[in-house]
Amino acid sequence: MKRETPERYLANAKETLAKAGIEDKRYVDMKYVKVACGTAYLGILKAIDEYLLRYGVSEDKLPKKVEEYQKALKKYSAHNGKTLGQFNALYHELHIAGYYRGDLQLVDTVKASLKGAKDFVAKLT
Image (tube, rainbow, N blue to C red; front, side, top):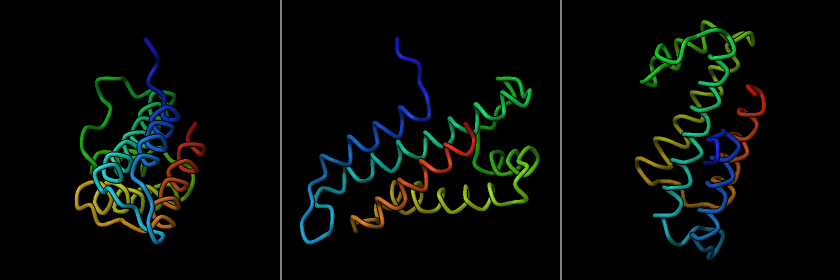
């Protein structure tokens, strides 16, 4: 069985997004965009979980809600709130606008969000 890694989630998001089709610099099939955004967001959560485990947080104490992730990043991040700010932006972009509401259509916007997710994961791993 393959190990679930943040990078694997991001790779799956990219593969899913490739199925969405592009027309006039917009994605055609929003179902794939939504799934890709949700998958990338899960990769971010996985990266935070791994980061917290390295800091000694036990698996049963890992966050379950976005507010808990925010508190954990505030407590354990050494980047003076920059990590929390980046997480909040990605949460709103990928999870709320991209996945939940399905508001992201522009290719450049979605790709920028996925790049932000990749950069965030790289910072934590």
